[in-house]
Length: 356
Image 1 (cartoon, one colour):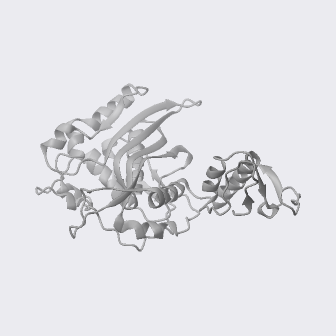
Image 2 (cartoon, rainbow, N blue to C red):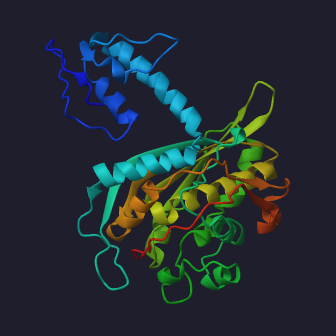
Image 3 (tube, rainbow, N blue to C red):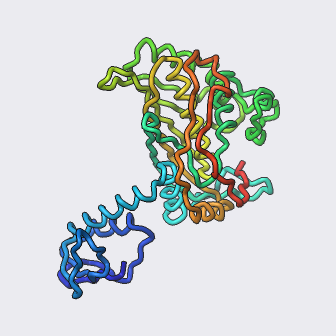
């Protein structure tokens, strides 16, 4: 990008600057003003017109429009799925612009502080009705176990690890509070406050209400027992009618904290599965899934994994999950889901130690 030079007319452009990608370059150009000189070799042949050989003056507005067109064509050519775009963008932001935490609660198994680098207030949006699924091709995602965990929390409505083990779920073992439970958390909270049943009733009886919320961050429960505070703690639901009269169910997942490389895409797709089950129960179509994370982080021992992922090329595939039929919420099983187009997605080689 160093072919562009400051023309001396007040444009504060530094020709020695380097940019990782066209997005960052466009962002920088939009902060400038005026006209700059550009080497014509920087431009590509367009509509049979070959630029003149000597440097030419070009307005920043024209250049930004030109580069934006190139970017749009590049994105279309690369055909990267939405999950991969978010994954690359967020990992880059964490690695290059993130902040280190101080005095972390979490520890590694060897007792060392599990320091993390994080960014805040990260939002992702997927229109499931248009085939946009939060499944990355840059690393494998434990989709089946993730859906089983949703069944454990919202169907079984228990915090019993024995039940989790029977369902093939073992990643909660480190949070055993000593009685083979994870405390008055998650499924136990859903059952105690009737969160799932109330949601299903309200979505059918008052579909256009703005009060469809399940919140597992119940202070009474948090003080009742020991246990990890809920990370993915709240869902907000809305029903809308499209121009054809179809009712669509949209859902937003709110998460206070997310270990991005380990669980980021497990959390997303498992809550898409929950949304599909609820939509099926209510007779609605599946709409948009959004995910808001307040603290999106990677641990210091995961930096190598982040770099491994960023050096991989996304696959030209569109993975998705399918719910085979609509039925009562409590009748769904893991066999009702089909995972499609995940061939070729590989595990990462880097070891991922958990911060407990």
